[in-house]
Length: 233
Image (cartoon, rainbow, N blue to C red; front, side, top):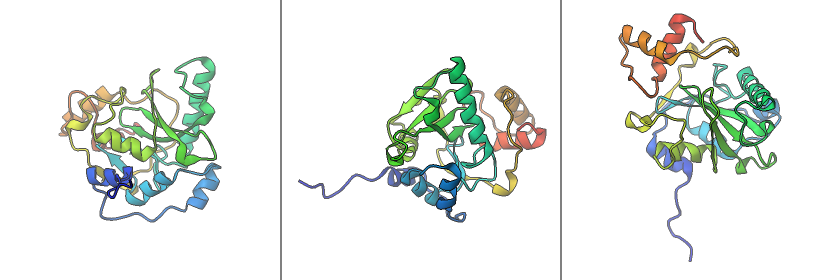
């Protein structure tokens, strides 16, 4: 018997949880993007970027977008290649070994605490079958989600999936979406130097009138303001 009321798609569920922005950036030239990357991308990701501008979910989760002007979160920027090379080098040295061959990992997102999201590009010729892997910020733990990037976002933001590397209070605040101000995002290419100390950001934020929680995630706006004020990016 056919279900007269099919289950909503992950994107439909996500837009109910997190309303998308009213204004939109120009569409993506996927032919150019895929030619640059040398690989086809999942259809759910293309629909996701058609619905949400470059920006941040829950003040914490960033999805890489080819339209983003920041090399930190641009899908086609040099930071993605650098990150992939770092994972491969770590794997070769037995440091933080990934759950799959590092050659299969394609960076697709990150968090304000430094966790990294990757597509597991297996099989390479079937991007709609790719899953998602999360690497702990500068640590050995990995978490693999058996589903698409959009399904991952929906599951995490709905509370169905708890990623061990993410703060336990992730969903206690606003889980909304905040588009990036692309004109204010132009940091230089990141180097493999140690990341910014989140404790220093908290101290700076409180000293400059920002509401910064004592633990958990640091609001994206505070981190951006800190980086712009100190040049630490």
